[in-house]
Amino acid sequence: MIGWCNIFTAGAIDQYWDAERHHVDEAYAKIPFPFAAIEKRTFSIEKHWNLAQLCGYLSTWSSVKKYIQQHGEDPVAALYPQLQKHWPEDAVLSVRFPIFLQTGIV
Image (cartoon, rainbow, N blue to C red; front, top):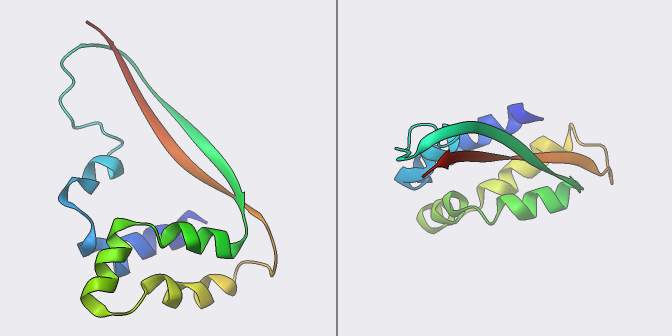
């Protein structure tokens, strides 16, 4: 399902993200780390959501809220019917969120 997410974030709402958003997209790799790095690790949180829950989550994004403020319409509402074509009715699907961890020695 990552394809729809990339299309949505890079298309409809890309210009509405805060400038610091690129740090997330880069897995925080370009932020100066003033310690002797041990290892970068990536974890994930997995949720099991229906389509309404996913769209509810997307509606919390700051970029979506800025889009709504500027255009008076909800981009998630426009995305919903597109996702509905590929999301089985009443299905609960797995949604994963990456977590990035950088550890170091002081």
